[in-house]
Image (cartoon, rainbow, N blue to C red; front, side, top):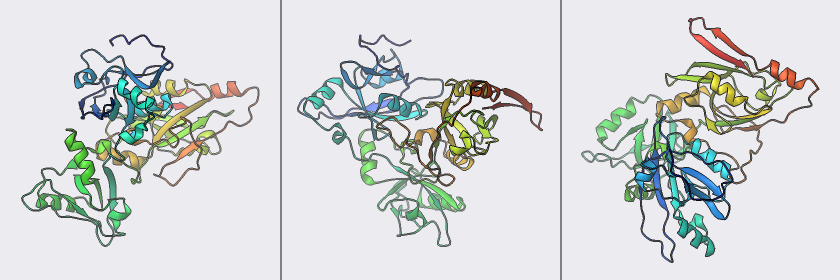
Length: 410
């Protein structure tokens, strides 16, 4: 159970979170402390051990109900702290529900920047721009490089006998440059493995084994120093993935007279577990118009991850709102990629309009690229609710391999 929170009216439902480690920074001066950074990690059975509140008479996103003996308390998160940043994104100005969704979508690891309550109020009273108290960009970069006839388009010059010191040289307009590897980078991970202990010989061997594609985690010396000074390890879970060709897509569907127009199927996924997949997308119905593709895997429903949920629970989540649903999905290539580096694609979902908390319509883009899709409901007849109900019948089939396969028409 959680410790009771101080008396304050809560405007939105608190968010149970989960956690791990943090480091403190020196005083900021003028009665305003400096932001503190917490890298919180968990497994699927834990909670971060605190709640996020929006309260009357109290500015900002407020940390409350820190679980006694929980990880967040042990690492130093304080009651009344204000949340400023989530995974390198400034959130103080964002709609509270959107911030909650952003943390939930982070999966099992999230980097938070917070400011103690007194410092937050003092900074606000001084008219200080809180975003200026935070570094511009503290994220490493994750890049997926495809070899062409000239090679990968980068070289690593780590000296023999000095493991882990790996500056990267990037010729202009080569594969690495086009994949977003910035000049002056240091190589931190190769195909999901840390190169901290790699010698030049071991690194060369690893590159040769990569085939025609390689995934690099790189960081500038300033970003590497930022984490090192705070005792935090730079990992791919904290990366800027804007250059990757694999993206989570947000599909907002409003049910029409014939339902949403897709089939939800439970099946094996690339990770070896069980996933919920989208199939039989009907032409012209809301799902197809929203950009849904057969084979997409559902990651979250209405802003909440479905990791650990079975087919029936997922269907219940989709039907929780009678006439609309928002799904986060990823295509098979993206699903396989994120599995190969051992990370959840949800950690890297970027909403298009986080400040307003709304979904901005856009046209579907090419496969694997960002796509935010919005569908409006067409005219409905008097029998539309009966027809929608008829299109929400759950079916159980047996696959040719003999394994039971759960399906739901939606």
